[in-house]
View 1 (cartoon, one colour):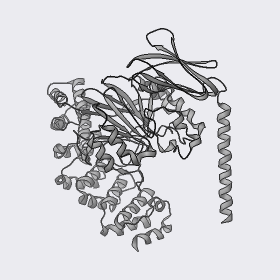
View 2 (cartoon, helix red, strand yellow):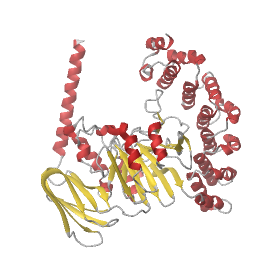
View 3 (cartoon, helix red, strand yellow):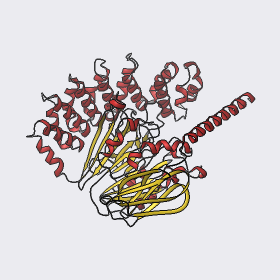
View 4 (cartoon, one colour):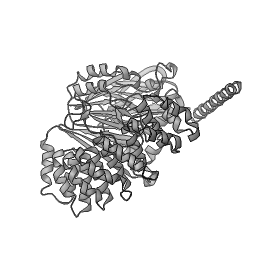
Length: 607
């Protein structure tokens, strides 16, 4: 025991030495004059804005500014206090107007422009992203800053985890370097994440607070911008969020309502068997969202991209529900759940979303890096598209175009109907699957997947045998989203057919799980007993089985724990045994043990 204490003491000492060395290196590389952190804008309002920057040594603050259309910088805002982190509020500005500004620090000069917030209700665009702390230089070197700013967002909503440890001063320069191009022009509004650390835990190193100027401050912040109301909740006050949001959302008359949080409400989590990041709703918060007709809740924390169908009262409601968007820096995720309209798996990080709110639509387009491209070869691709609409005349107009449109016009109409999740379009979209034009077939299959209509499920079964893998895969995914239970018997045998594409079989197993769970259990058990090789299909069968298994299946799950070597399978079996017995065994811990070391866990389930 003494040796263990000595080892821990030595490890702690070495960690302290390493941290000291890192800080010394960072300080040695820091500039001794000019800007330590380049100027950036915060907290824009119709009549004012905050300019912030950091200098290596304390100094007074001064910002020269003037109308962007003019010449020079005729006005100056100053603060005589000697500080390193400078925060200058410019007031008396005109709403929705462009200005230029200039800041000097020693021999260094920074010039840029900004625009004040609009005072009137009008359409706007803004960007959404989160959990950028692990991006390194990938955001800049892949061209995302200019890609994002070319779409003219008026502000950025960041969902937290800007840095790995918020109390460590030397980590913050990477964040400001990463977003220097956008933050010098548009404000970034941030929901504090767990990695920003608690201001009460580190009061002497509360860099998140000191580096930001949020409207209303923390832990709650909100503002109106054009036709949108944005409510932001810090992670340190999530328990108080329902009461605060209920009051805040009642104060606005803006037609679109957006909430930014750090931790997910709905989220599949990572591809692990123990589901520690899975979130399946929050009734207290959802009741507030439903009451105030919140249009979108954007969250971070779990490093995936995921978008839900519109949900209300814990059920899908395409017309009146709330969309839950997980925009958390990375790409990946678990197998789809019933609420999933999109999980991004076939691309690379970084990713971000652009949201445009007009008088009648809220349009979300999300972008990520194409796999295998980086730096000079980087290719940014659209990974998701969703349109919320107020007036049904819009989708009806696009639906009418399917009768006469051809070429690009037809593809555009198909794309729009899928993004609008317009269920009445499904029958006509199915007919387009028979087109001889591959582009039309692919567009129709994608649109059907985005809509997820049970009304055409029977017709889609024929396309599960399509020679085009993309058409077959999207048909299967559509069935996973929406399928009458009476079709389950027809698709169950297909799950066992090893000649079918894995993506098709994975989605069909999901279709059984959500729409015919008893048959899903039987199909999963049959597949696991069939000698299916390790891979994504077997993993999905295990995932379905652990959630649908009954007490009579305990011997099968126990046998998995005794004999399996793959962590995903063992952790899933342990999770399933916990569900059936009410035990609280650490499934991750079990999966890390060798088979002959799992006896004590088995006893916990069988006692």
